[in-house]
Image (cartoon, rainbow, N blue to C red; front, side, top):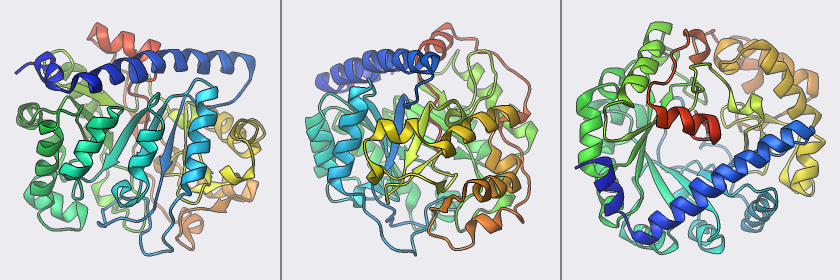
Length: 392
């Protein structure tokens, strides 16, 4: 079955909402974002919202601390964030956790904002027919299932049991309900061969998956496991796989790290996206857990406009690296937090001090440029925020 046939198999309303809310409004929202940049104004093109820090798994490299106080972002604040963002032309939101399916008001978010589009990041273990039916009814959500490896690797990476099977079952349920279904994989030492294989892409396609979002493993959270980090040759291998794969595979392959010409970039440094955690703190991105502002401080646009912390982060990072500063220079992050008296928003005491002992590892900024070959991807990356939403 081709990509087109898989897409046509999805629910008609889901397709229409995707084309209008995601594609068209995303394109227009990105143009408004660029216009704001030229005027010196600040408001991200899209935002990631962690609705809760609660989760039913304990994954390696996850930035979320689940043994601290459980946080659930107030539903009224979530609606306010979305309403204010729409006024700026931003209609796309990534919904994160923890595990967002543990947030009791989750479906209300999608139903209350039919003019928006949402990407639901989930481990899939709690995904079921009830949720799938509601997502099909709202038609403005694409579930993105984390897929971390085969039977053995997935259980180790996820800290659970039978995760591989449960994830496949969740994907099957989503496709059976004719949702626009995606898979995310955080590529690391233990799964790179599987992730960059014809067999894996074919398996996902055969399941009815429309897109695969490739991330580079980032050592974060309580169990960063630096042994899983990739070296420059392996990161270049990912880049080459994506560029070549986009010319032949019947699945959309997305990355969050390179422009159309192969230049690396950081979405947070561009001001393209930021992250609001389950306590309402506005962080540069999900894995950089420090903040000076909170959504409770007032209207969102003035908060962004007046944030010296975020402004300095963007300008400083652009002068420093086009890769990931968390990986390339964790000590700098500690010094930056001290400079701005930033809050540790991780829920882990000593997180900032831990940067002083963290090893330096390679990020996507360390590889030579490999330009896109597929003209559709070239156009998408130049005219929209396609592939530019990195979360880890």
